[in-house]
Length: 166
Image (cartoon, rainbow, N blue to C red; front, side, top):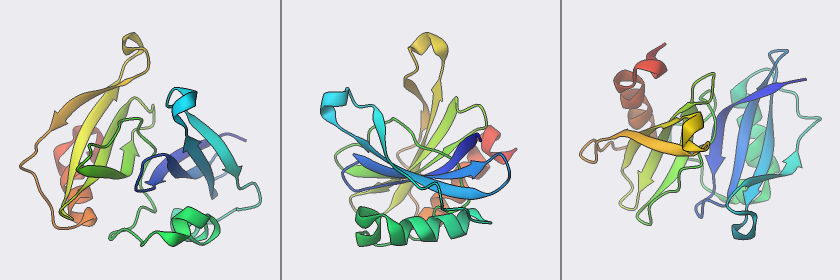
């Protein structure tokens, strides 16, 4: 059964993530990944939640938050990450961290929702082309676009980025 990641929750360090997955049959689940420096920065599956079958992305997110130790220990991010799309390989800057990544169906476009050190939020748009060796390239970022919470940043990204409006 194929599945598509629709949301990603990252830890503070950026070396652990949980992907919320939508399966071909319309159900939802989650998988846990880690990224180690010795693996050249690639994501490695560490927890496949085969039995976790949920009717909604929100239910899968709640189950992930209660079932994955490091995620359980983190405070929930305001606005939640339930029904929104996949993980970026873009690294957060030292003053900020990626709290959510939104992807298109083809997984060649990405918007990272970023939490800044001062608690505000912003977003960056990326693209991935075959000629780039599969890496992510920054498309747009407005450092003056600052939002009080994650929900506002997601709404602004959806308004500003054409493929997110579709």
